[in-house]
Length: 308
Image (cartoon, rainbow, N blue to C red):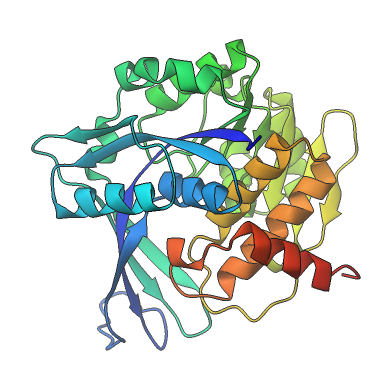
């Protein structure tokens, strides 16, 4: 049986320009052709999980515009359940403006649009699928009240809650105590933990656990992922060395992969290694959802890298 994953989160349309370098303030640069594609942290993570073989339900909002219609059509083609997606009359769909430099680094600005119209009533309407899931996957591109509402429903039903705290913001203990696995990057870990910018990732992970999180997985890019559970000392799961083309959605690929692996019952270290492989494949391709690999591709990659 396919693992059941519910993603409560954002749906955006990405407008991507590749440039020789990222622009400085006040600078105009000529880039390549404009790429238009579906994105948003929630939708990216949902597509990642669906391509890895999970049965995925996406809960969120789009506007009643061409961007929203195209997104819903694409999610249906991915085999996802979009019955819990609400079309908001008179609202624009979310849009992300993305610059990608020659070495794969990126800058992103988001117009949230309909994503901010997601309400606790939408979450309550989705309660049956949330409570029946193996994993609930959350981010922070929808209102915090909806994230908290979904986490409460899942926690009460014994469903594993994964929160990717991006875009980073201070989070209340009432949410953190409901989170089974928190997946910040290094900067996000410091911001959410409240520690200074020069603090070590392990210190941030320990601080987050003191605030109520059960397990913290700090993604460190090429340095891998730092894992800290309540019972164990922190340990690092190495990344895979690959030629990076575009790092957009690398974190989303990681989170989708982690959700699937944990929903399948894989041990935490094995699940993080699997997630690292999903992210490694994603950065070798341009775009967000277009870069996300299939289960067969990840299996072949891991078999080829058994010694890594």
